[in-house]
Image (spheres, rainbow, N blue to C red):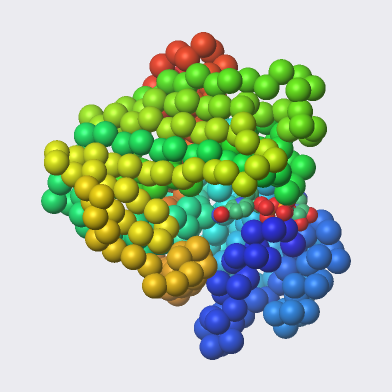
Length: 329
Ligand SMILES: NC(=O)c1ccc[n+]([C@@H]2O[C@H](COP(=O)([O-])OP(=O)(O)OC[C@H]3O[C@@H](n4cnc5c(N)ncnc54)[C@H](O)[C@@H]3O)[C@@H](O)[C@H]2O)c1
């Protein structure tokens, strides 16, 4: 069991297990010991090191697929072909063609799906959505200055995670889509890290500067920085500018024109995972794919927006049409 199920999804599901609404039937990980540990903690009877075996032997209503984005095989297609509802962690792939193929299988099966964009479940995100319903947004800005060291090898390698913009900032790009609708075009410049520049094993760009055009006409810029390593300093800002309205979103507070309009009472980070888990279980029970905020198919636009930024940066900032990029034209 990896980082995200142990630290976020299992704690979010725990109250639903305790109340008897959810039974965690089986755990699967190629690291069988890690799966056994979680199975023991949650009273699950079955542990597998192969998803093929698990999906063949178990009768499941839903699965959580929490794999690094380059490691997907046929676990999603096999599950949905059996009518099993799927929760899939972001970024769902680094290969747009593979993501489209999985999306088509999910669509055909008619099952509930959710991509792990839990930011849509922060109460603060709902506040911004409500504010924007009565405003005319024209401009959006994301600023993410990450610092510290990567805790997993694969999240420090461009070829394994797609870079910090794909692996991390995808959450915030998806949140802008929740506020502002789909993105149609991307253009990007990155400050590349030269081979061996380190600190090892990092081989990802220092800086990602990405421009977006939304279908609504809104323009936005997302700047992600991975220059800071050995200091505590960091910065995270999400701004949406409408006529006479500057909205600043964060997990714990929403400001408009410098004045606080909403503040979280406690634990915003945890609560987003809990609300997302609650919504997924309710949607599975109702067998209603419409009940989720980030079903797999519509979420392809968030993936295209970050992989399209990489494609633009790799081609001198050329403008990428995300519809063409998604469907391979
Ligand atoms: N929503 C969030 O805030 C958030 C936070 C962290 C990670 N994530 C995402 O969750 C996904 C998983 O990340 P993680 O941090 O848990 O990764 P991780 O490296 O900690 O764990 C991955 C797990 O997958 C197992 N695994 C690998 N191949 C397998 C296979 N074929 N069958 C079964 N198990 C296999 C590994 O043994 C490991 O236990 C990534 O896409 C990541 O981007 C999301």
